[in-house]
Image (tube, rainbow, N blue to C red):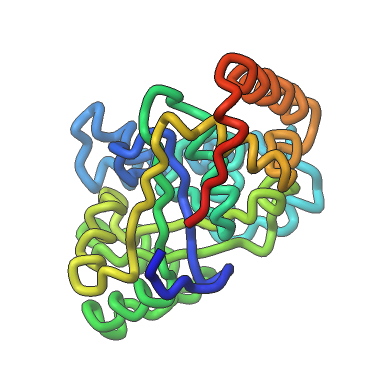
Length: 259
């Protein structure tokens, strides 16, 4: 590729099994099913958080609970365990993102979204001025994230309280101040002014299994990204896929892809 490739940590990556998918958090996709407005969306979000907090102590260790301060940290834990939130998952490794782009929708072209976090933050400051400054989440959460009509400011965050899986996947999140904002729409605006800040790499469906074979040689498998017995089971399934593809199509294992 003829791009100035930013370093790891500077960039966020998101792998998706279908290149036609957008960049909408699960919470937003749920709300769209019912045509809910901002005020009601904020209420649903608050009630969802309260419900999770009421019973989290039954399932989380005291050490994890002790580190859950502001609601955004709680959202990260909720997101990790499958609850819909306004957060959108990203990671800081292009190889991990490629894995997620290749493990679903085998008949569709996949995609890896690449976002230069610093360039996005710079555009937010230019567009929104002081309002785009990172708020103190302990003191200013309500003012910046709990208001109807909040600006469409997109931020990339990571939490200090990370689970074993989040560490393995080098995870981070994007979050919008406006609860109903579509992350793709915001990033498209940024890309319109700075095309090097946001772009998408297409992974053809025909090479997904080949990519998984290559990633296995780098120990990027379900077993390493999803610590525990479930991850091991998923890794066995992946091994069957790549082995079966190689048996039926030996040429797949001989191709050598380069950028």
